[in-house]
Image (cartoon, rainbow, N blue to C red; front, top):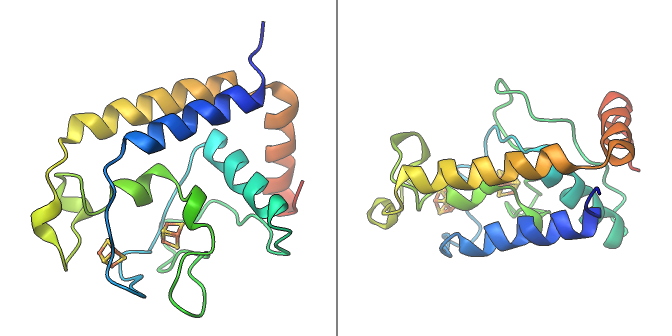
Length: 147
Ligand code: SF4
Ligand code: SF4
């Protein structure tokens, strides 16, 4: 029997809660460049936008050619910080040369394997997203519209 989307989102938040906290420099968005998220993360972000009644529409997956994440606001803060995807959470704490915070490199102690494990668990959640939710997300991507 398919699991309700609520359960999948709870599991996603469990994964997020396992990522060590990282306190950024105030008003810094230096690393907020191209970012990608999975389907379940996209659903999570869209729900947050809906709950906050933010007029903002979920942005399309950011192209790797885009220099700046579309969620960086005018104050250099993240508009979706509570639901930011895994990639944003591991930046600066993961021992990976591609995700180096130039201001606090000493905090990069988390083994790369941990990131792979979380990615794999998120991928499994993606596979369980009900078809109706998946179809809606695909339509939204095509039209760039909120659900
Ligand atoms: S991880 Fe580093 S570069 Fe990125 S926003 Fe935080 S302080 Fe700035
Ligand atoms: S989602 Fe937020 S934290 Fe992640 S890159 Fe975009 S602005 Fe930065």
